Length: 149
Image 1: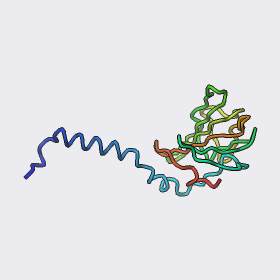
Image 2: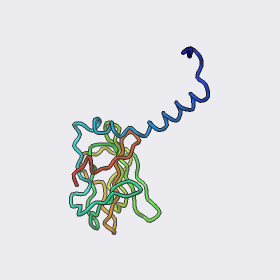
Image 3: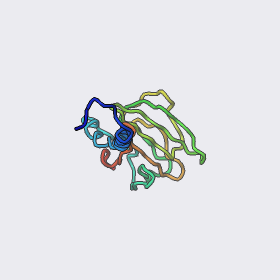
Image 4: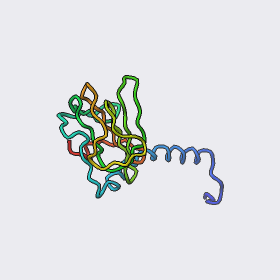
């Protein structure tokens, strides 16, 4: 019989470490519960088509210069410019949701600014395509499960 008061051995510690590491990324099942009562809006009202990217996120054909809006109320936590002169805006929302908008041209927000759902934060870049990502507690989500496009 095994004495439960004995210290864990190397094999047991390794098993626990691997289990915790694997389960750490399986939190997406909690996102629908956290989103209960939240109504996300489309980041682009005139979106023509959307395509899930293999690298994560949703490619949205918005149209050149189309307004890009916050999907829910929140606070801008980052505004950055990429190497191709397009910009990215990151917004923190309640219940540990984060939205990321990439492929932006003119930016109308700044870090620390509070936003309401539907508030314009930028225009789509000349190509007219943006990439939208939605995260919950560090887990990437499929935005189509939370937003009608």
